Each structure stands twice: as C-alpha cells, then as structure tokens.
Image 1 (tube, one colour):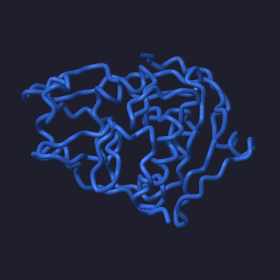
Image 2 (tube, one colour):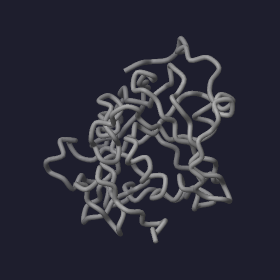
Image 3 (tube, one colour):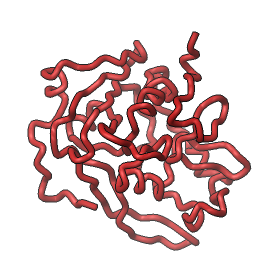
Image 4 (cartoon, helix red, strand yellow):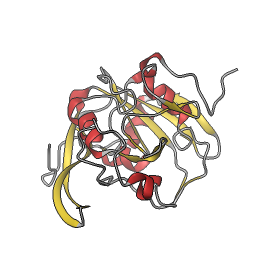
Length: 228
C-alpha cells in the first residue's frame, strides 16, 4: 500500500536528497545544519527554472508539456508564480505536498524557517548564490485551503514575467528586477483538478468546457506586462 504522506520517489528524483522520506525540491531553501524550508524558494533557482524551463523539483529539463500548479485565482488571471514541473514530478508533488494534495485545511501563517537563524547563511559554499538573500515573493499569510489544479502546457504557451522588488543585503536595501512568474499566452493542452478542499486529492482531468470556464478568455499580454 502506498503511503499517501510519503509517496514513492519517482525515477526523476532518484538523485535528489530526501528528508523524512520526502524529496527536497531543488527550488526550496536548504538550511544551515541540515534540513530544508519547504515554504521558501531560492530565487536564483526559481529564476533558472522559469528562464531555462527546468523542473523546480528534480532540476532536469522539464520537457513537453510542462506542468504549472495553481489555484482558481491563478487560472483566472493566467498568471502563475509556481515555476515549471516535469510530468513525473507533478504526479509526485500532487501527493507529497500537503497543501496541493488537499490534506491541510489552511496554509500556515507562521514565519518561514529560512527567516530565522538557520536561514541566514547559505549552507552550500559551491552554490554560487553569494549567500542566502531572502527574495521570495510568494504569499505567506494564512489562507483557507482551495482547489488546486495542474495546467499542462507547451513551454511556448507562456511568457516569463518580471517585477521590481526590494531586498535587504548586508544591511542595505536594494531595488532589483526579479522573475515574477509566467503568464499564459495560449490555451493549455489540458487542465487536471488535483485536489478539492475537504475531500483531498482527486486528480481529475477537466472536460474542455469546464477548463475554459476557469481560464482567461483573452491570452494576449496586457500592455503593462514586463517580460524577462
């Protein structure tokens, strides 16, 4: 029997380290003294995932199609902040991540582990990040659980967007341009509902009409969009 909290590690992640039986995605922040912050993303790796179309979990080329995870708001806007995942890692993530799998009734509001002492220094001297600089633009406030969807799309079907953001490094505030996410420029190949609040993982492919009702009606980039 498969442990739904600790699903079988896919072949795509055979080379990745694990903690507590779970794969450590390459995009998540590693902590001093071991461990990982599953709620914080390493901006350098996140940007590489978007710009080089690499899977944010296994760090291999994401292939075609890529998978973008999001909720109803992301689908309606056509704007995603979760970077590409390959299809094998998408299936794994749909079981391993408690929020995406629908096993949690709300997202935690507590500070991320990487915002504490263990996250102040990058533990990997060969990382090339010049030290850990917190620049994760994802939301951290407490939210009730929502439905999650997996959008299967050709890599040519979205554009990588950027935004100006502030970061503090060595006690100084800096303004920089950072990758913000990806915006759909074409209809997805398919949309799968991953989970439903109060029910859990369902993994149900939506009929085209149901998927279209959740997606943008216009895939043209707005004039204010800033592209990478």
